Length: 502
Image (tube, rainbow, N blue to C red; front, side):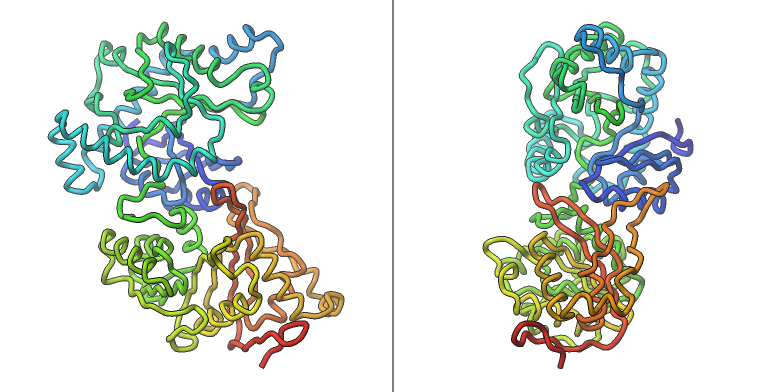
C-alpha cells in the first residue's frame, strides 16, 4: 500500500472518547467505513504516518490485520486453541503482504514525518549509545502515560512463546525508538522478513476467557508464528508487536504503527489532565480564528495547550490562584513554544479581573477531590459558575469537566433555583429532545439531557445546555458539559432554601 492507497486501521480510545475520535478521523483523514465500539474506532483512510500521527483524541493506532465476529466457543480447550490459531495465522501470504505494508509505512514515516532535530539526529546516528539514551527517555515518558491506557486495556498481557511470566503490557516499557530500530524501512528480502523478532499482546475477555487465559492464547499464537514465519520471540524489544483482542463482540488482530501512544505529547513537560480529554473538551468549544478563549482554572494548562496547538489563530488566557500550578503551566507553554499564544495570570476564579462578556469560549476542568472544596461548598460552585457566565459573550460556549459529585451538585443548585420541578414541566419544556454527541452510523455515546439539566436553561442565568458526554478519568467517572450563552448574564446568590437572581 502506498501512502495514497486506503489502509485499514483501528485506534483505541479512552472510554467515552470514541465519538470524538470517530468524528476526528472523518474530519482530519477523510476516513470511510468508520465503526465505533467500546474502546476502539475502526476506519479506512488513505493517509501516511505523518497524517495519522496528528490524531489527537486516540490512544494507540494499529494497522488492522483481521476483524471478525466472536469466535465460536468450544468446551474442548484444544479445539478452542486450534480455532484461535487458525483465525490469527491462516493465509501466510496475507501475513507477508501485511508486513510489507507495515514496513513501507515506517519507511515513508522516516522520510516525511515532522520530528524534532534531536529525534532526527538520533535516527541518523543509529548508534548503540544513542539508542540507550533514547530508551531511557522513552521509558520515563511511557511510565508517565501508560497507567491510563492499561486501565482502558485491562487484561492485556504481553507474551513470548518461551517466556510465560504473565507480565502486563503496562509493566513492560516500550523503550526503543518510536518505530523499529532493527528494520531498515526498505523493501525487505525474504530472508529479512523471516528474521523478525516479535511478541504477542493478548487481551481476552468474555466467554473465551472462562476457558483459556490470555497467556495460554498468546503462547499458542506465538509458537504458531515461529513455525509458520520463522520469526523469533523477544518480549523486551521486538521488531514487531502483534495485538490480539478476543471477546464476545469481536475478534481483532493488529500491529501498532508507533511504539509510543498518540496521547504522548512531546511538548508537555509536566502532565495534568489527560491530553485526549483536554482536546475533546476544546473541540466542543467551537474555537475559530480570532476567538478569545479562557480557562479560568487552568492548572498546568493542558486544555490551553491542546487548544492552541489545534487552533493556533485564536487567543488564549489562563488563570489560576496557585503559584505552583502557574509555574508548571508556564513550563509547558515554553516547552510547546506557545509563549506568544497563551497569557497566564494569577487570579481567583470567583473574582476574575476581566471585563464582562469578553470571551468567545470558556473551557475548564473544575477540580474535584478531597483537597478541593468545590464538592461540598455550594456557594463556591455558584460563584464559579456565575463568574464564568459573566465573562462569556452572548452566543459563546462554556465547556466544563465535572465529577459525578459535582454534576449532582450542579443539578441540586438548578433544582433549588427552579423550585418545584412540576412547575417547570408545566411550561412544556420537560419533554425537550436530548442533545446528541458526535455520532457515526447512528451510534451515539452522549447522555440524554435530564429534567434537572433542562431546568438549568430556565433558571441558571443565560446558559443553555447543549450536550453531556460521559468519560473515564482512570477509575473515575466524569462528565463533559457543554452550554451556550443565549442572553446577558444574570447574577445568582444563595438565599434561604435556594438561589435568587439579582
